[in-house]
Image (tube, one colour):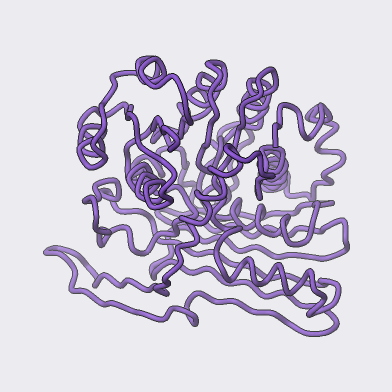
Length: 383
């Protein structure tokens, strides 16, 4: 049984502890969170102790794995690096960080030790995505020529971080489990400058919004499907409560991908993709594949009904992901998503931000050279 030290007790921490316990391979040994009340509530659910600091947690749980899902993004990299420097295996949720340097620092901290640095990436374990990759790799549509992907999400509720254990809240049902669920609306929007459609001055826009909350997931997923990216062009428009980004990727294999990311969508969460090649087309649309729809009357004062759509399954892809991540530690398996993978995806996302600011396409080779990122893809990776 692997001992898990949890750094983070928000909605994300709650969901991840449930998945970890369902694997039958993990035991939650202790929890730390900046909000003691949240840590105490999750600890009561898991039957473990609460710690006032990460240092105290690491001292009390000297073996096992540190799972980092800190609610404050600026703390995530610090907690990952601190655990690695203490000689611990670390699993961290995506997005790993909002700055490339943070991910490089994580890789550097992992380098001197024999410990693993792993990241969650549920997109690669969802059954439809795994099936698409298998079919494309098997030549079902021939060489990929064109990809159209979209990911729409409503803004999280002000109370999205207040989730009862053992039950999903109405506020959370429209959000993708692939995007960071542990922050309330204020945490998601504080770093956005609502510019009413005007371009942000360079250096004034924090990495956040639709590009880093939504499009980043599709950029990482499409890199898994189509390989390395050659160039990026992106556009963005922002208004109060609405953030829309369009990213065009040209892959080294010759394929072109258009990614739409719409944050502030008035409907429920939507994920869709279309892959076209000379032999045919593969399509996926979450609005057409959900097997179950539940409509509930909104709470008092709510302006709309709550709608929950899902496809219940005897197998949970996120539990399968955590089983895989734990096996990477116990059996030295190769992770489906490596730390170097995470770094490359963030590079492409940063290049998209540069394109938004400049209004020009960005060549990845030139972007990497300019940013002095030629220090090795796998630096510190112990995959």
